[in-house]
Length: 561
Image (cartoon, rainbow, N blue to C red; front, side):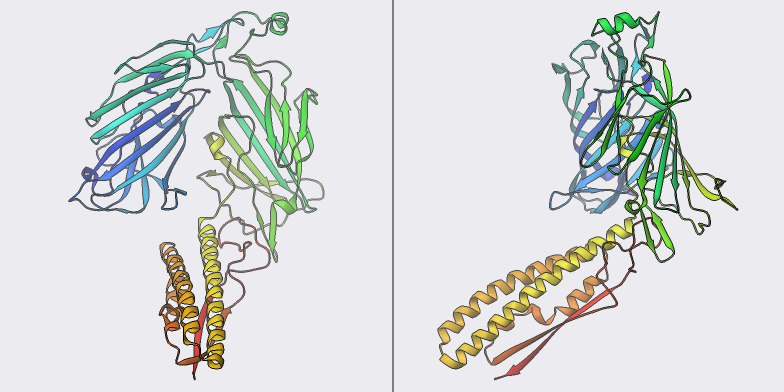
């Protein structure tokens, strides 16, 4: 399996126009400083002139590497340099083997246009210990095998690869193109005019004593009580997946010599929620007292020290639990309740979870249960849990997922609710600008009244010119926000355009009107998408409001002198 490591097929193609896409630049970084392989790539994707617009491109992994991929994320920078996460869906390509992902661009890439995207991938169990067995006094070395080139079915003008290692102690590495090495960094390239499907084996053998900890199995139970409490309990099976310990273990040498068992794991830190209380840490024997709890402002930090240090091939088993107040995670709208919690939480830095089972125990009588997760999970059949004074049992939601990393520690988010909240924010900005324009009309009304008394035309023209400048700037800002509403696909864009039609013209240029009476009518069934608005099908907190549509209008009434 090591030979397959990171011969990464990042195949880029436009949907329906694959031959028109090319890579102008590919800058790849491979972080091997831990027991994970983190690959990030900055890609400059260009659509050849004379072709058709590309609405999506493909990412692909070669056969055999798919089980090692734990996380894949793609982002693109917007006009204001903010990073937008792109939608990634698994797809199939006729006549090609391997695993493909379709990445939807925020807007079609026109012929001759370019776009820069960032690709982030995390692979697990790809660094192979070599030698596979070491004594207590030996250091741990691992082997990484990959591809010198950024594998692509398209012509690539220029590409570079930077490999970050865990230490400066490197046994050997391939030297294609005379790479440069500084301390713990190896840089390959730049390689120019790379033909499609170019491959060349890259191999690095280096020292890596970072904790090779793997959660082989974990069961996370979340029990929601009727009485304002949420109990969380995690049963963890942990294994050191580094080089296996060869020979006996000497506690005396381990404590006397600082570098004895340098690749072993003595302790690690677990980050718990800030509201966690009544924390316990135990195993089958009983309570484990070798732990320390530190309460911080935004979290509770727990240092976990197993009963014995973990060497390669060694395992341990423990249970950790705590209580949370339900008001921070449970919201209601009448007799409907929404629970918002993480599917997986922090166990240790750079964590890898081979298999995770999550069980959510709901109060007795719960029905019409719906689950929404930030990524795909395998939902099992619901179960029943019986405890004290139960009659017909408490419903239990059971879900599974394998190969998880830190990037999977996400809150549940409903994309539709996020879009509605973004539209609401833009609408509030429009309302603020309109109020400022109303102030301009009031100032103009005052200037006209002064003119009627003084008949000083120069003062009126001076004030009018200043107000027109501000009016034009505000109008342009409203037009910009209107474009953002259109981008979000909101029907409020048309309402904004129709409502502000009369205010878009330079009405301040005429002085034959002595008074401008502006009536701002905001007609709404309730509120402008309040922050606690519940989506129709997601676990987003809700408190007493339903989705409403905002309709507003600006009415300009003028009275002649």
